[in-house]
Length: 247
Length: 134
Length: 131
Image (tube, rainbow over all chains, first blue to last red; front, side, top):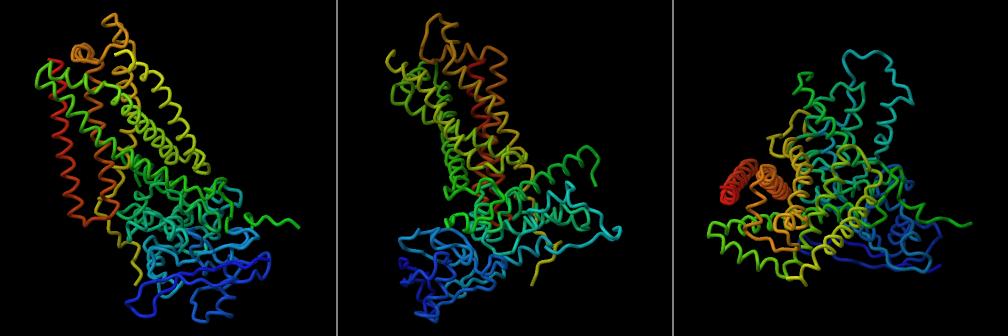
């Protein structure tokens, strides 16, 4: 059971001082110790001022998103041994990107939620819908949507996305993934506006299939597929309107 | 009890291809941009070169003779590599737009790299002997 | 604080058509470039024309190639499409750090002008061989 070195990017104490890295020696509490375990141990035993978010600790709530050894991940879902094996080593933790840092590892997700609102993240039923909706579990529609419903809004995809880094107004993977799930849902009544919102200046056309989002999603959602699906939907609609079948 | 620590880590695994930390998707995009910019630069040079025909046949020929010297033949192979990579990755992106191959995106990037290498070597096989003839 | 669904700042700057035409032109370019590179440098055409292998590409050879309608078509199409594809690609890169809408439109216009001028210049060169 080797000790690990937990190195955390911390915020300076005053407005002028920038960020700095601080290292802590953390014992390996258990073989299945997670990065979150290391953070909590450090906070309880060495540095009570260490700031980080966490809640469920079982990869369900999406609260503990950070960057670990240069890669986005949930602190609770990243096992120390998967990073450094059983011989100890360094684990570097820093806050998610593309969001304002409140302190240490805590970021302000306001912008992230705003992007979701811009595509209308809430389901809105059609006015003339039959009650109850009849979509069978093994239907094509349900199968197409299912993977994209798993989102826990952790923001890791938004942090990982290079395009979000260049364009702070980019809607981002999570919002577009949600838009796709709802646009594909035959019960939803706002599909047309959602598609339009997705296809604006800061939407789907900025995605360059870099796949950073898909690579880091803790729920394994094929996010790039969702965005590509939206592009295809816009294409088909354009074709239809050109031929005269537009809606 | 052998625990697979990688498997217990953050990957949900719905996609067959979780990039395995190689950042293949990023390199594909970056190289597409790099080759694209290089090719636009080359394009303007190429048009300028061909336009030396305005100065007459002899002027044109003297420029072209220089540009087919060994140094430029080798440079042309880099050009071929850039064009081939850009075209192949372009096809890769087009496949994604058509909904094909998204779960194997990193693998497709490596296919592009391998094919680019092979085709550039083939081009070299046909063009490098010319250095020794002229 | 939440932006409503219909508050969509779409000025059409980053849109469907540039994305679409980049793919169309790209696919066409694969074929046109393959013909262009093959005929220019790798085929036995020179041997057929001159009876000699591995001849240098010179004025006479270019002129003979462009005496054939097919290659005139290929070269003019290539010039137009490669300029579109290349400058559209550059436009994509410039838009990555999003400029203000009016700057974006000015930049787009500038690229169209550059493309048109370059096409005219290249066409002039081609016509010099043909006429």
